[in-house]
Amino acid sequence: MDKQVAYAIAGATAAAVAYRVLTPAPKTASKPAAKRVIKIDRMKLPKRKEVWLLFGKNGWIGGMMTQMLKEQGKEFYLADSRTENRESVRAELEKYKPTHVLNAAGVTGVPNVDWCEFNQEQALRANVLGTMNVSDLCSEMGIHCTLYATGCIFEYDAEHPIGGKGFTEEDKANFDGSFYSKTKGFLEEMLKSYKTTLVLRLRMPISDDLAPRNFVTKIACYDKVVDVPNSMTLLADMLPASLKMAENGLIGIYNFCNPGAISHNQVLNQYKEIVDPSFTYTNFTIEEQNKILAAKRSNNELDAAKLIQGLKEIGTSVPDIHTGFRSCFHRMKANLVKAHGPDYSAYLPVKLSKRKK
Image 1 (cartoon, rainbow, N blue to C red):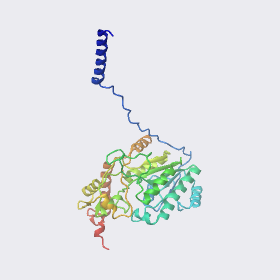
Image 2 (cartoon, helix red, strand yellow):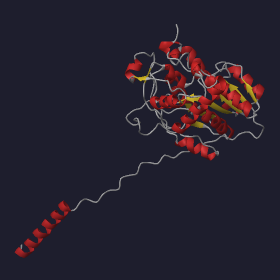
Image 3 (spheres, rainbow, N blue to C red):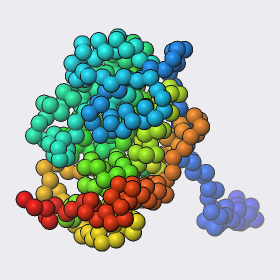
Image 4 (cartoon, rainbow, N blue to C red):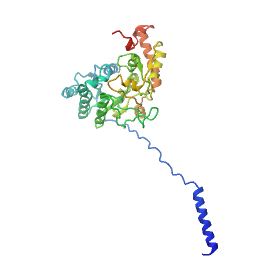
């Protein structure tokens, strides 16, 4: 080979190698995270006067819904049947011919969900069989059914850490630390098949009074509380929204909590600031809490994007959890003053350890 040609080839080879070494490889565009597509489904409602039928009239939520239906001037009836009695449910649906059913029936137990651990057959009849009866019959008869369900079927995990992304309506339950939550998770999967049911995932519900079922009342009575951010449901905001959703025929699953998360300490600090300046509390860990409970408790944040979009489409909205809580506590204080005068301290929750036995 001619020396000049050989030198030229060698030079070209060296240049090519140097180019490959010194020149960074072109960057391949990383795929953007798939954007969640939120679909707001509705059922076609009958073109006749609204008639409402409420199951669970004796419960806490049922009582509030009864008052709300009265205040809004709705034509409504209160079901007498136990939901696990399918033929009784059918008879009342045929008798009242509702366009909308509100299902607030079920059991959590007294004083709390630990009851379900020791009364599993009763819990199954009320929370699973009864709920399925109502949704199934409503589907068969073309009636819109709103179920006041629970979001206590999730717990923080590696994909959904504290402060990270929340659980969506498409996520499957990952918490089975209590019999109550385990059965609710199974139930929700079955309810997805019904195209006339609106499933509302409530969490740690709070009312404007200090009712025994109120999450604030419960933790204010405890000697020690954990401090974990959670999604919560302020009933004064959310229950009116549930009627609006039913009126517009929304169906499917919704995370039914005020947007955002708030910790136990943040809740109690606002309670102390606005309602009870003398209030004190002490924290302990989840591990310490588990030692004194028959069943574990769910802690999670639920994504509110679908709820926000669905409410926007029907012309309404709800406040975020931190803003909502301040308003709730101001209403709570006003209610206490109205009922008992400015010195209402005797009517505030008492720590369990200080109660007379």
